[in-house]
Length: 358
Image 1 (spheres, rainbow, N blue to C red):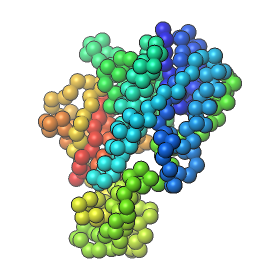
Image 2 (cartoon, rainbow, N blue to C red):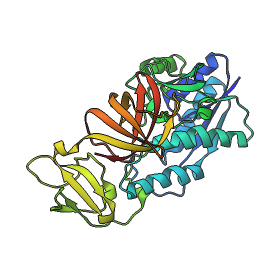
Image 3 (cartoon, rainbow, N blue to C red):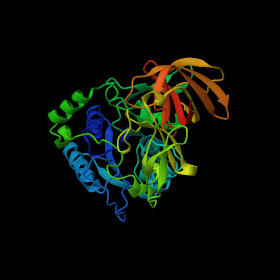
Image 4 (tube, rainbow, N blue to C red):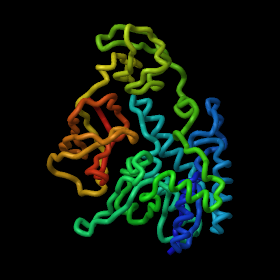
């Protein structure tokens, strides 16, 4: 069986290729190119993001790994798709007062879609597509559905970022790192003599100023409290996100946080810590992974951020592909545009985009 491995130039995808080759598969390495070389982003600092002008360094690292493993290697151009889908969404969401998660969208539309599709268009033949995500894949013979599971290493679990993958996409992939810890993967890479064994992880999708991507002229607006009292001024509501505390520049008796964005008025509403706590949310554009679309309320666990511990919730379908989510305990900074992802233990059930919180 031929496996195309999406390679980022990091240790995880390199180890995925290594493990698959050891298992006897015919492995091909491929890196998706997403950086538009015509971009001139002044805010870019260092190499911490996957969307970066230093992409060529990642390509060279992946190329060296493939040479070491004696497998073919290709660079696949996904620049236009990335620009039209991921970067366009990033800008429109921020300008609508929402905070997007570009990695979630990229996985579903670029990494697990445009990349293998473009590879086939170039004539590459393969049976499955694999990545170095820390997540597990299963199949339920009773429901006839593919299922996503949290990875063994819960500190590195990445199932959250894959919740938008369709049943068709899941049927065409392998996730070889699901049963490994990060340390085990680094040890395997080191034993195989791969130079990337100690390479640091990428920290975000972009390490520069978000205004490089949004490209809006500064627009003076007001910081206000819930009662409308003006507390100060800012240069564009899109520079802030719900729950933000740093960078406000407003003196107060207690720390202030962003509790609401009002795009139409170009206002950023500030409040104290207790005003960031909320009991519920609504979400839409649901994608149900391990279960079929529910028709009645049910209880499960949920995450509103990839790094948080899953908490108890009650999920109620509302129709129009949306749900109401009620938390057992108050939650801090429920943020429109981010994802709420549902779990039953380690089984990922599905998720959607937060539209409002209350």
